[in-house]
Image 1: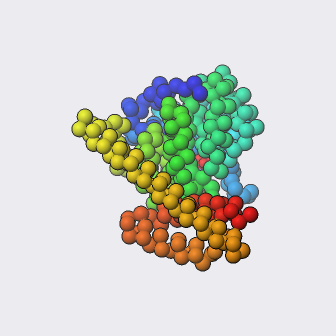
Image 2 (image 1 turned 120 degrees about the vertical axis):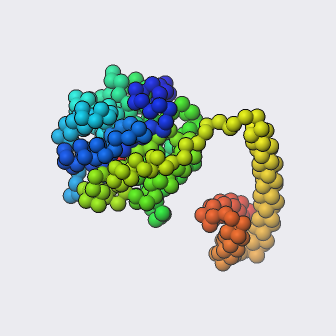
Image 3 (image 1 turned 90 degrees about the vertical axis):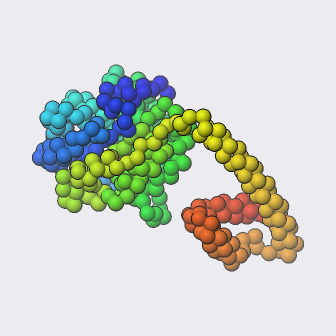
Length: 357
Ligand code: PEP
Ligand code: MN
């Protein structure tokens, strides 16, 4: 992808993480102006508001439409803060450009659909807008990258990604599971692509915003998009995850900014030493896994001889219980141990299925 560095987008962040804040939805002109006034702060560089809202169920508030763009233009004129909105069709792009909206984002329910993204990309051709692409609702990195490539191939170079978490059927602590390994892999593949974290849609609850934002900065993400409303409890959409402007400002003030590089040679040597140790430990892990798999093969042979089923549920429950409690005692999380042993167990079952055939 041909990308322009975020410092050249004209948003005056002074090298700080990009701060985007504003209500989930534009509701009234007054709500927009009051929220924007409250958000004036050196850490907040763009004001957001959705005017077309893609809602899960019909008959919920679906946004005020074009008039919301007029309110955004008024906010921009009054506060001098650049403004952002979500676009989901060529018509939305046309209207957003007509009203001088500075930043357009593609929502999670749109980035899943290559036809819709292509239509948006074609409508953007020739403009020099900043475009941010939210991850698709399902955890599919290729689909996310594909959406950004479509926008980039239409000539948009001020391009960034927004990580807003992924929908899962299992109920987790988060509204949308962060699955941090996905944005980490995106960053590895496209080191020049800015990634903005949206802690509001990941958490789904205002209490989680700070913690998720700090994790994002620890992972060297380039900015945050925080939903903020003058009267969050009365918001017409996403009420639980919105914070008052003053809270949004305080969150950005409390966050610790991480250095991108280590200080001095002493730390570099220490880092090299620790990484060497990690390499060594990983090699030991692989050899222990291999030894374990040998035992699994032997068990598979016995099961074949005695015509016993490969999956022994009681044994598997026992293993999981024992390893989890051991892991917890060693300071690891239950989720981590469960993930590792599920992967090991799955591989063992796969091996034995081949053996007993
Ligand atoms: C939003 O930003 O308000 C929104 C609808 O987000 P998402 O597309 O991430 O669900
Ligand atoms: Mn929202």
